[in-house]
Image 1 (tube, rainbow, N blue to C red):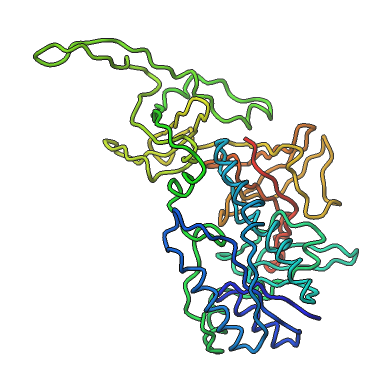
Image 2 (image 1 turned 90 degrees about the horizontal axis):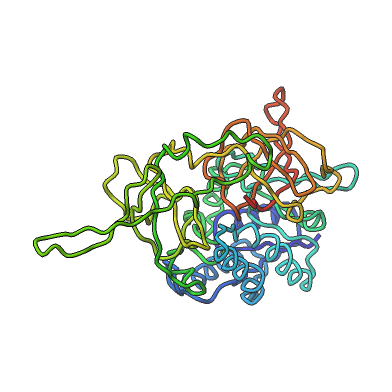
Length: 417
């Protein structure tokens, strides 16, 4: 069997290639370039060239053919444009998820097949399971601190059948040890950070390539605002973000200084205060702490909501601010993705499962409730910073009697609210 390894220059994909070679597969490596523009990136234009150089050295060390492919046009049209459009709508996308489903296991896979590949392998920490009925399941990786199944949550059955994950049964420390023993050039290389194939970015500067900066108010919401809110009863109410549009500020005039210059200020409001200014609500995301530049508080301020139309950013003081927490979310019907269509719920059906709403979050107990408008996910405990645009990913329940049982990923979807 001929296998193409997506060699990134990192230690994980390097060990994946080494293991496949040792197992007797006909292996070749391919490095993909997906990004050219360096505006907003923190490492400069040479990063991809350095990564390519390391990847080529790894391939030479292992003794496998090495190829290069430029997929920057595909990345721009399928991932980057989507990312900019989502931020423009006030949602926070996860481009790495799209990179896997649209680039690595689609555009890259097709290029690999032209070179004779039967399968594509990557250095993801997750596992594939072939089932008796011919379907393929995606399981968490063995290393709980490195499981990357979340990033593959949009793969189809056809894509999974072409995918191999050679290091999913290993822990990161074991992968490092294998690389060091084999003296791979990437053995001591640090893990990459930031956006997949773009790198670490100054997000506001990066987004300003496409999105305009428009100043607006940062409104701090007091806890008193929540005291008289009605308790959510229906699924729709539980999955709705807090509405802060009722917090309005009336102005009054006053005279200031020795010359009694007439000025305008906001009247005191029991629900909140204008605490600062921002450069565009689309540059902020729920749960964000950095970048607010507002002092004078005992506890840190966190973004609890944005209003793109009004260009307002709402913040709350403290990790336990009620505006940070909700018990439910909604994935619109047309954005629900089942890894295996046979697992799909029909309208009116429910299922207990475990869910994460961001990478590396511990799995949370929840109930899936399928309705005509979409899939509601109701958590046993309120969740912090449920963010529209991010992916909710749900897994089957584990067998508590089996310590080696790995949760199977059942599906995923973009959080609409």
